[in-house]
Image 1 (cartoon, one colour):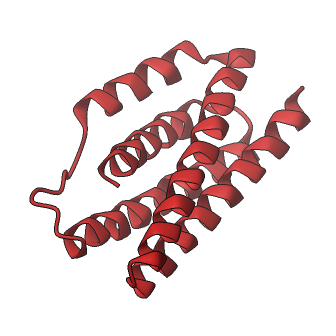
Image 2: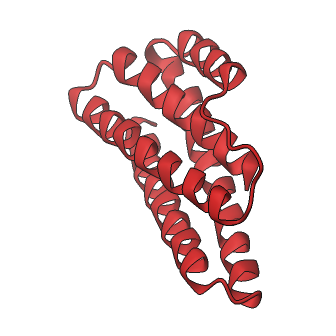
Length: 139
């Protein structure tokens, strides 16, 4: 689950960068909302890691922040579809991870933690669907 947390740091960072670069006001608002949700997701994942006995729970990832900044910087104008596609793919990947975590936690009897992971997976799927709609709209 630690790698999912690192991915969430990257998501929060890229959405923060993109929210400043998007020209479309409606898309910018969607990205701002995603950025805000990512902070809540990070807090949930950090709590989950602590509940599962993680020795150290990261509070940030400089490497993910830097790479997000580079991706956002390289995605100007019509090239912003590259950043949206990357975010879409990452959301789907992390959703699969959370679904697997939920399945495992359910099997070992950690029902509350499994429900939290399932909620996180649903949030990531919702993000991916919204991004997919924006990508098809911009095509």
